[in-house]
Image 1: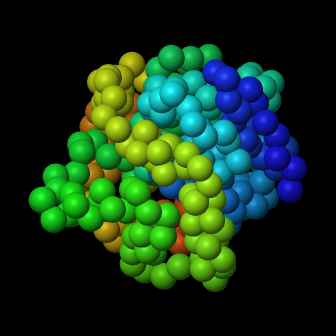
Image 2: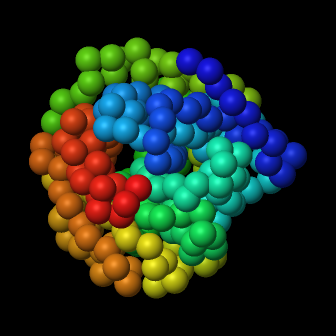
Length: 265
């Protein structure tokens, strides 16, 4: 595994690249790192794609202690990776919190982006009661608590190497600045991605696990996101939680490769 680094705004963005073919850029959710896609990448490579998995600013091997972590800035980081890899165009896949970032990237640089995929996007901020908000505050300040919470996002089963992945993830979050980066990624920022969705003219795919515990009704959540775009479709991954690329990588890869073929990627 060779990790590359890209200087961005006084910090660095880490990414790794595998395969040959049309470019697909993968961006993970809050608290995770590029290893979140460890089971998906080989399947996309086998399908004939060049795949770059990125550590979101503040996460993984990317530098922490950045001044801000807005979706627009994360989207600009993804575009910079596309530029470093030859200018694309690329299909951008954003999981959870990164689902917002790929919208900004597609709207801001249509020449570099030929399609986007949102995995478990949040159209609205989750409505939390006082007790749940207290738990969230604790989770965003404790690597161990986040690790325990992360485990709950796999209601239908976990990858065989999940325990090892989670230990490494928690160890990374114990590094200085990592938990602050998590809070920065989740901090409210304007404009919200939903305000930019209609500017996206490229094909859009919304993917959601049918058992995603972060949504009271995952199917309704997927369709709510789909309706925001000029051209989009929504698909469900059966027996999957918040990270379908991890708990159902084969089914997720099948949906992605079909979408990529339709977009000409």
